[in-house]
Length: 68
Image 1 (cartoon, rainbow, N blue to C red):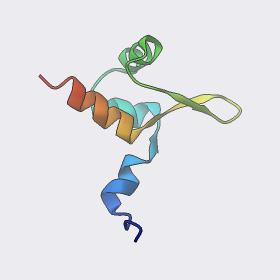
Image 2: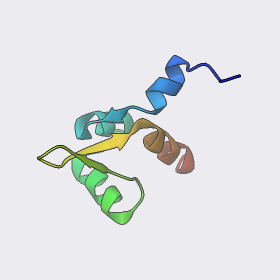
Image 3: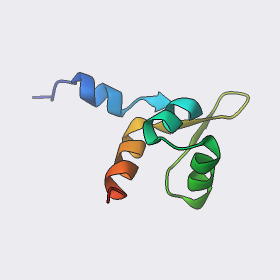
Image 4: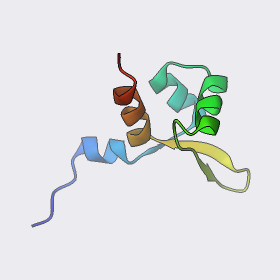
């Protein structure tokens, strides 16, 4: 039997804009760009303009990993 999707599961798979991701992480956009370049968080490029997007689940994993 397949697992039913919950709202939390749907939220985990969403893509966030740079601004939304920065709000979640509470960091400046330059910091998030630097972290992405360093490989701490994966960025996805979409569209003709190659805009950055970040998976909510990746951001949540980063938060858990660096919680101190």
